[in-house]
Structure formats: structure tokens, C-alpha cells
Length: 113
Length: 115
Image (cartoon, rainbow over all chains, first blue to last red):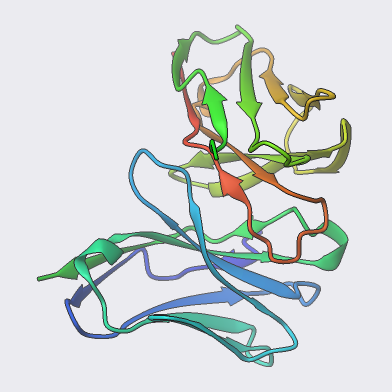
């Protein structure tokens, strides 16, 4: 039962262009969504989050969009830089289990020079 | 400040054995969560502890257990190891149990290989 899905296992983008990573969820109880970034041999690091009362949150080059009716969120990275090459995980939580994150399978982003 | 520290970083066990993994959270953090990462299943929630109490548990068999000590350090134990338990076990800490920033700080993980 995959409650959070990242349907693209990998994505390749040219440096300077926009990277768009997508995530879908099925559980209507989720009200908080997060993106984590993971380099090899390191633990995931928090990138950006969004509450279900918003539809957009921006932090520098990173913007997360939430479409509650479609149960879909996306992460935009503009402009993409080589250091952005990593695996990106989408995660969701509900108030009841605030610290229990349900993760997607991850998308490996490669930024080409 | 020091990050989340997990030990050991790598270990190899055989089927039927048991293993104990340790996690020291960031100083001052009282919530510790454990996740299992495998290529097939991704990152899956194991359990979460706050003030020595287990607050949430994922869908794992009873062979997986954990505890938290008064200094917030945590251990997880897997008994009667199976080949499928081979995974990266990640520990994460946060300041409170209701951190709706959702900002968990992860350690580098303990990579367990079961032969």
C-alpha cells in the first residue's frame, strides 16, 4: 500500500534549467508534506515543507506546490545546479502521527553541465 | 553542534542472529525515530520515541524493537535476523514530538548485511 508515490525513479536536467519532481499521495489524512534530499552514504537532509493550508512555499531556488484536490505535490528547482544531483524523497505526515513520515520511493536527479 | 550519531556504521550478521544498533540524537533533541531503507521498499518508518516512551510504531514484526534512555539515546534491536532485514537503518532526531516543521535530522545510518 504505497500511500506516497514518486513515479519517476530518475530525472536528468541540464544545468541552469528547471527541475520538476513530482509526488502523489492517497491518504486524505496527510496534512503536512516535506521534501528531503539524500547524497550517497549520507542521511536524508530536510529541504522544504508545506502545510495543507497552503498551496505554495518558496525557499530560495526551491518551491513546493501542493494541489490538494489532485493529491499531488511538486518540487521546482530553479536554476538547477550540479550540486543538486541527489536522490529526492517526498514525505507526508498527519497530525496524529506528526513524527511518523511516510516516504515516497525517491527520484534520482542528475544535473548535467 | 554535533549531528545525529549512529553506531556501528556497517555490520555483517548471519541469519538467526540478533543485532543492536545505537543512535545518539542531537544534544537537546528528545524525539528519536527509526527508519529502514531498502532498494525495494524505500524509507519505511519503524518507530518513534519521546521521553523514553514509544509514541508511534510502523508495520514491522515483533522482531524489531527499540528503546530510549533517559539521556534520549536510543537503541533498536532486531532478533532472529532474516536475509530481508539487510538494509540501511536510519535514525532521526527532532526537538519535540510535535515538530510540525517536520524537520527531522537524520544520521548517516547503519548498514546491516545479513548473510
